[in-house]
Every structure is written in structure tokens, then in C-alpha cells.
Image (cartoon, rainbow, N blue to C red; front, top):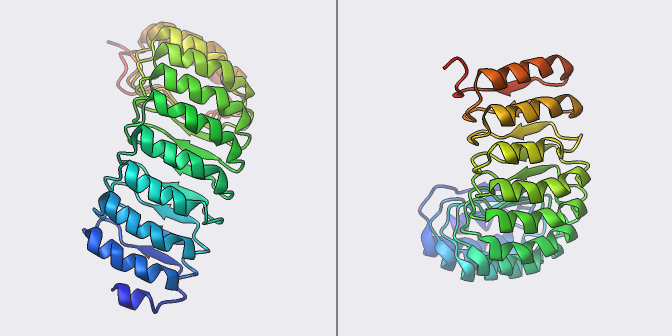
Length: 301
């Protein structure tokens, strides 16, 4: 297959995801990549190469001078593979979407990537979900994110950032001038992280989507966030946080001021009859709202 692909010089998209091509297959594919100079989309998610295979693929990537979308998720990549990949990424100017979710980058792997990210001048989407990234790794990443001047979407969900990591990220957000989507579900943010995030959110004037699902937020966290949400926000997910009726009351007061909000998810938040009544009172003053979920709460219980 690799030999045949090398002859497909006009190939623009290649999807080999969810095939166990392993190290041997990646090595052969890497030798074919330089011949596919028009390739713009490459999906190698869940192909089981691990870091050695990623390192092999990395050797062929710089010759793909039109590559815009690269997906290497679910591949067991650790720091070594991330280092080799990072060295190649800086030489792919058109790259706009980089998907590295569900690997094992950790602190060291993220440091490698952080060095190269500012050189990816076309980068718009960066997906790093579920990568064992802790708070100590967020400093180097937060330092370079504002240099990714075209960045529009950042996914760090399912990483144990804690309030410290979320705080480090929050500090750089106002300088990420085009960031419109921020996904931070399952990051152990807690009320302390929500407070640090709330200090910066009013300065994020183009943020349209914020996901804070399952972050151990309570009523205090809801209160902190409610009045800090940017007016540009369209989609907000606070599901699986025990904000209860008190948290619902705070959000009900703030909702009419978020004029662009069209999608609100408060499912699994422990909201009861009292909280639902506060929200009901606010809804007529939310003309942009198109979708709202209060599923699996305790209304009527």
C-alpha cells in the first residue's frame, strides 16, 4: 500500500485510522509521504505506532508542504515521540488543525510541543484532551499560546490541570485574541480554578464556547463565573457540577446579560424546584437562547 501511495502524487486526503499498522507500517508510510506533496489531511488516529512509529512518521511530514490537518490521537505517544513530532511541526507552515488527544504526552511531551507551537503560524485548532497533562506543564504552554496568533480552538479536557493549571492558562487567555472555543471539562478546576478563570473571562471578547463539564464546581463557583462570562458567549456547558438551587439563582440573574447565549447545559447539576423557578423567570429575557438542558436534575423530586 505504501508503495502504491507513493505514486499517488495528487492525493490530498489519507485516512488510515483504526488500523494496526504499527511501527513497520509507519516506517513504510513515512518513506511514501515525501512523494505526496499535495496531501492536506492525514488521519492516523489509533494506528498503534506508539512513540517509535510517531518518530518515523515525523521524518516524512516536513515534505508534506500542503498539510493542514493532522490527527495522531489514540496512539500511546509519550514524550520521546512528541519531541520528534515537534521538530517536524515547525516546518509545516500550512498546518491549521493538530489533534493529539488521548496520548501520554505528560509534562515533558508538552514542553517539547510548546517550543514548536509558535512556529506553526497557521495553527487554528489544538486538541490535547486526555494527555496526562498536570498543572506543572501549563506554565510553558500558557507562555506560548498567545504567540499562536491564529488559534481559535483549544481542547485540554480530561487532563488533571487542577485549579493551579487552570489559573496558569487563564492568565494568558486575554492575549489569545482569536480564541473562540475553550474546552476544559474534567480538569479538576474546582471553585478556586473558577475564580481564577472568572478574573480573565471578561477580557476574552471573542470567546463563544466554554465547556466546564464535570469540574467539581459548587454554588460558589457558579456565582463567581455567572457575572464574569463574556458577552460574546454562545455555548456554555456546566453539566455534572453540583451548583444546586443557589448556583442556579446566580446564573438566572446573569443570563439576560449574556445576549449571545444560545445553548446552555445545566444537566446533572442538582437544580431543584427553587432553582428552576429562578431560571424560568429569566428565560423571557433571553431571546437568543435556542437550547437548554436541565436533564437529570432534581426538579419535582
